[in-house]
Amino acid sequence: MGELVKTIAKALVDNPDEVFVTEIEGRQSLIVELKVAPDDMGKVIGKQGRIAKAIRTVAKAAATKENKRVVVEIIQ
Image (cartoon, rainbow, N blue to C red; front, side, top):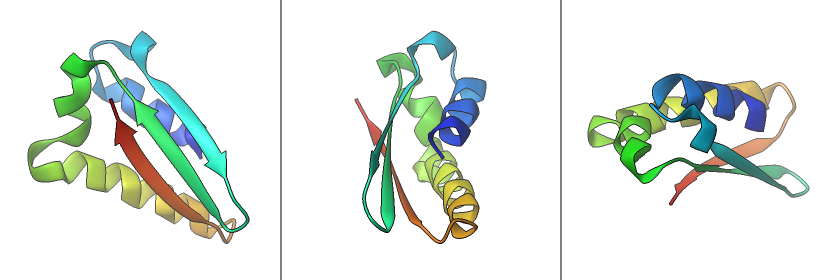
């Protein structure tokens, strides 16, 4: 799941070398923390959070195949 989020984020930002993804796995859930450069934060979040919501939707759709719950957090 982390690789999926990382691939999407790298395609959106100007500094793909500064995209970092951390996965924290639990029994039934997975937390994916996405960290990007401060200049690219707006590109990952989008207007009114639309891009962030789309990233979360794609991750949740991919997680349903594995019967897991995914939470994508965008951190600074």
